[in-house]
Image (cartoon, rainbow, N blue to C red; front, side, top):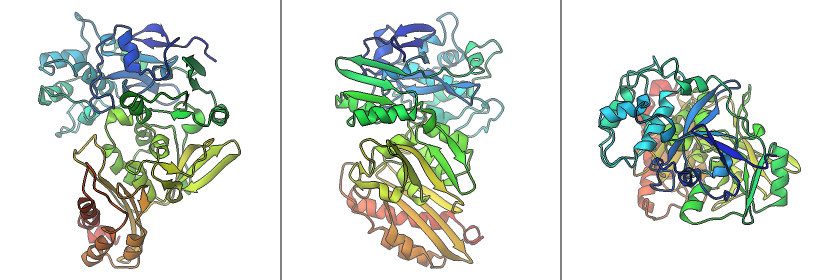
Length: 479
């Protein structure tokens, strides 16, 4: 147990002693005089707060990962390495990212610039970036993926100079110390406990220790990426008496690919899952780019997105279409629950107070025809009004299997069972999809709210099936 936890920021060790569990990493670094990172939205939408953190990239390597510092508790970074914009370069020796932003006019008022710098640096050091340029509107000839900046907002430049700076970056020099750091393992995560003013943050070393703490403190809040609880702490002033950090538990960070299933650890981030799956689940590949921003996906976990029980989470509709199950761990052992039976009411689930999600299990083989439709006010980095996950199979021109998951149309994510039944056994034809679209429009209990009206949600449900039929040619569908 680390009695006096510290965090390395720009190579300097800072004590976390006396740091309240609800204090964000952003507030902590600013309290140390490192004021480059700013608070813009306090909910992970603007990226003004982004910093770099060393994260594992396999057993013996690491990578620089950009995170929203406004969301995660500072104490969760005990024994970790953090770099802010101040740590990347000096006024007379700018980092390449800083240099390109300066000479190409990527900064005007400067408020958002440090956050852009950190997100851009994360992509600059991404393994495999160099030499894989696509040269389209969203990728530079240098391999830079402009979506790595999707979580950073700027109201001054119009983004073109920022994109120009990103696409002008070359490769790190051979003596670049940040590139060299990636060749070494990421820091270990020793157990740590901090108690301030009656509130405790615990980082257990094993899953059993986490479950024991959860049993002793049934009202404890589990945090991983903290992309949900961090918003509650910032905007609603939530102050949990007991926080358990589970994001680095080995037992929750395994991804295994078997003959009959793929099992994804609950504490793996969305970015880690995307990299490790390497395209093996096409439906999730369609989901990932629409899930918030890269900054959020670098911290958000699949277990957290499911554990909140939110009816508008993005992963449940896709996982329902994939017929996923959840592995729940508790003091009495493990049990497996179909995701379709997991949600019991608005933000309520079958998970007992002393249980947590260990993994999501997706059965194999996968249905070959899939789609994920997210209807929101913005293309990226937004909350869905309606989300639809679809997975279909055909045989000799007939739909033999249909699985449809819905979000945003009821108090919980749901399966569209009536629509599935209307599709199965019917020919792959426009007539079939028009008829089934009428059924899908009546699934769930969509409501009027500030994101969309009930009528709009119903219309979007029906459109989802028509889009699927348009996008999948008869030749592909019946192959």
